[in-house]
Image (cartoon, rainbow, N blue to C red; front, side, top):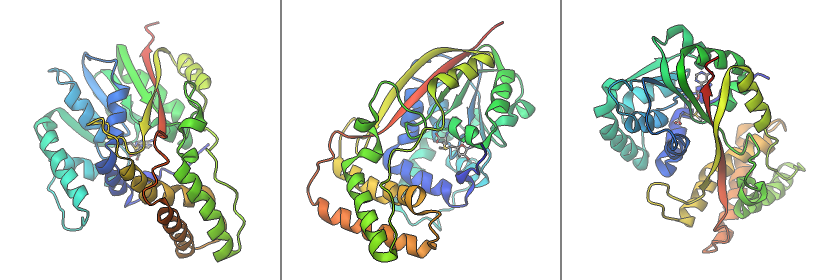
Length: 335
Ligand SMILES: C[S@@+](CC[C@H](N)C(=O)[O-])C[C@H]1O[C@@H](n2cnc3c(N)ncnc32)[C@H](O)[C@@H]1O
């Protein structure tokens, strides 16, 4: 299997951070991933560090004198944004019109700057980490990364490289999303964004609009087939010289602020409409049907408008979950 990394697109990292500014989702996912790992001996590597949301969580949690953090990212735009957020390059806000995003960057910078002498950013491929990382690491983290390695067909090379850079007791902590691996503790019908009542209503509207505007019959969008399976992943890692020390799953709710613990379902509905409806409509329903971008956008927009017009104050989606994050913590086997 091989597929292009969508985060390499020029605008993708800013979109990722617009989402982060609203949800703190990547930061929260990193925090939950590392919950059971209180102390680390030695250096830490953040693989697929993107725009450094995971890097900030890692460098602020582990502040031991030897816990230097190496962040590895293959996307140039994401790498540059990460440097900016850590105060390692100048800020240029001239083309950022989103106030929430600007505020988020400023707040981020305040927290990250005091840590920036302990973090090194590398514009490199994860699977080549053994070529440039110096010394040995006590912890390697991949927050929302592993599925991309699987899709790019570089998982085996990455596993070998991680094994090479980890020290004898080293830990590898990774997670993914229930869009990509079926959770085992939760029923997908209760948790998946694709079964969210508001998203359901949107997909039905999308079917109607595709018919009216383009004469197309599109199937109902369903929860996607997972790209990997829990047991196979564990077997693969065991064969590569790791043993599983922790498996868990945690929930990320729509409209739930992980920082304050507060629920704001209206904010959740807006998040769904601003981000997920657009993204999943195009990626899961409209691509490959021969429509151009403008036609796709028009169908998505009319369906979105119809869905939002009808929600009014109706918060029927309360209690539904946005995503389940399965997490795996492995230890390098000594023999
Ligand atoms: C979903 S983002 C998560 C970013 C970051 N870990 C966070 O939590 O904010 C995944 C990142 O992995 C990067 N990535 C994917 N495959 C990669 C590879 N083979 N080498 C380096 N980076 C990669 C992507 O460019 C993207 O920035």
